[in-house]
Image (cartoon, rainbow, N blue to C red; front, top):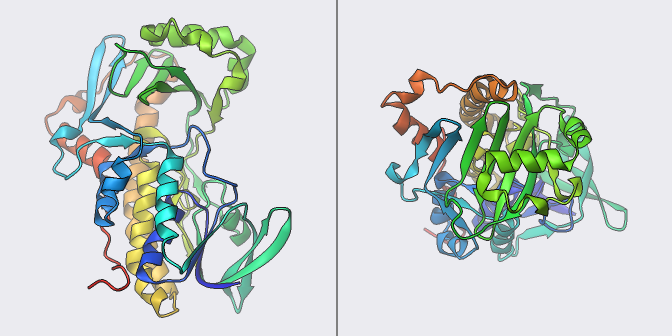
Length: 400
């Protein structure tokens, strides 16, 4: 098979890039190694910056018809009271909330819209196993599908958007620099009842951290544990997890029995890393394949989508001519490296100043700087729009 652009990975970065290129008239093939998008406890936070991108694509109305919950702010609940983090209602933007949407619904919407264009192909159960190299450049991929056949796709540009465990990155011999994280996350859910809190929040107590996300009919809960600490938690028994949840979130005390055993939880091994070089001749890496983000601030999806928009804006016009000059790939890296570095620096600061001390059972203290008047506007812009938000500039084929 031949195509102009082959994208490995049907997550937010790959799906969005596929849509943007397809609507502009670029021949694009998207490979997703799973049979569907149904993976539980993935990032589900769609921030105002991504809502703006959907609006620019004319998809805002359809997106908002998906089951979702709007969060108008972020706060931390401590043993001493509530500490506001970001009030998005005062954000200078069209959308002033975070929409919590199951990621599979988001991806199904984006890929369905891309499939309306005859120059877009989505191949499921297709896992990249190697790169095609010719004359010192990447010229496509080899992939395996069900029930085990191997195939080649030749392409002008290969894009790796296949996540933090990127097969393409491994095949290219690129290794990200690790910045470390003091924690892993245990995900699980409990039913939501009338009278429960309405907005998502972070619950912080000496020795414990938990994130509670309102999913309308249930709570999606993240219990933060020390890095590599799941085996220890499991050795203490499910009763320890239940009692901890009940102590941190008393309104859930009558429901913790729903956590029957450790088969009801999922573990995210947190990573924070990035490549120093995102491209080779004929190859570009974006999203988590280029920079794995910590779950701090929940901005992973939005960084990935912004990478996709920048890629389409910068490389799309050349792809329409059947070209992908490496100078343009370097331009994508240069533009997106700045927000990546700044966001990861902020995540590392929170990990070091809040998460690590909390997990070490040290007393929690809100830094005095956090109470300065200037911090509120900075926090809501950082959480809501991020650093250097992108806008769709690659026009749809046939539009003027």
